[in-house]
Length: 238
Image (tube, rainbow, N blue to C red):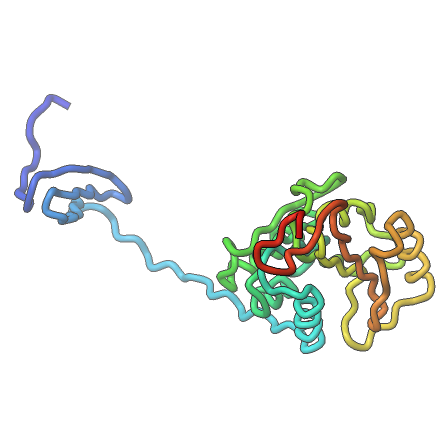
């Protein structure tokens, strides 16, 4: 406290940056050296046990085939995919393995958000995949953004919490949404089918259909006034 020098030592190069952490003085120099100095009377810390995460359960074979079917039905393995009402992260993991999609997982609760984010982090997928807690409508995404949307059937036999028109808004032209996702061996109940049919009535008839798995498939029609680039130098004149 009186300004007297208590200690001195030499380092290689000129000291540039100083930091104090854990009872140590860290010094970086102009020569690229990093020194760590600490007092001899600093008590040693006891070794700390580090918990090793339990292995993640493998997704089921039926869910793996479902993920492959989703990518095949979308017609492209590139672009953006939205998984609504995500609950465990297994589907997002499998979609990432089966495609080059950037994936957005929208969850309905903080618990589901933490669960999905933990799995994707463990699988080193965060960055390519992101997790958002989403409630209410409109959904917080730009119109015509997604190449594919998947809505799980966990809400059955009720209708989804999102209007059918909201899914149509988010799809790019030609994009595909699969609603009431089923896995091999599942048989949707008549009540389930009736609730989903009523929910989808606001969609244009040409935009909705049922596949062999009993899932509702929504395909975004082409925008009004658009054409096809069918040959070289195509323009309004030819």
